[in-house]
Length: 380
Image (tube, rainbow, N blue to C red; front, side):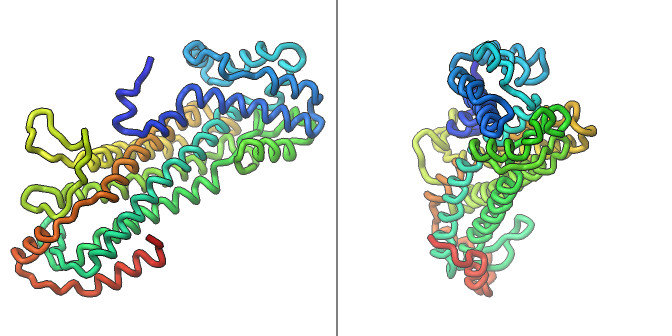
């Protein structure tokens, strides 16, 4: 079964791959082998057992469809996965696999590995948008245009000012996401009740090595403390919203009768199945659709924060799919708007015509200075 027809119109192929079945299984196996190696290094299990685990765990041998059916019954991916891995490894090594860990350790760590990978992909396209907008904003820093408030002609502004505002808003949102991921995308390793029982008192050292192997930050167990997940999700929602703001403005500027800016012509994008003359702002459509869906997803993460005691029921199990959807939506929005920002067509004649029609002069106040302040020392 494939759901690419649902996913790909809203997300990039690279982002879909970060969260797909093969990646999820591979990340879970990486957690188990890293755990065995760290426990062997610190005397929790024998080195030969860890060697067998590393040598015999093979994610390619796991059938995703069968595993999914078993996970649906078990209530978590880890239970059937660990059973399969133990059978795959066999003997005493198989029994040593997953020692001191719990199902939520696997689920949360896999999610954080995916968050790190997803963030790297997303940040690249967002920076493309910010940089392209900054270039255009500086180019049009002194160009008078009609400003609009409450959707009506207002007073003159520099055309570059609205581009600089968009660049700053999107850049600030990316900085929020960077901070959330850097601060909260951490290893989860706490065991059954978050005490690291079964680690022979070596839990801190084992966790530090597992984190280093997987490229995550070490952390104390956070099974029922979901502030980090909420922070990452909220930052994604804010980023998607700022991208939606840019998309809304570009779409309004592209309307017939305004025509001050429009998306670049790209093969296969912007056409109509019924009206060949139309040039639709389809990149903006992707971003606006994402901005419509994101708030409800963020609300789901916030609603799940009140998790019970040491490990909750239903709350953390809901977070993975929600955070995945937010990254997927953000990826599609950012990829679409990167193309828009880099190829944005600005019609200087239309800008001048609309300003003259408004009859409010051409005093753009301190627009140029504000643009410089918004963009700061950004290098184009």
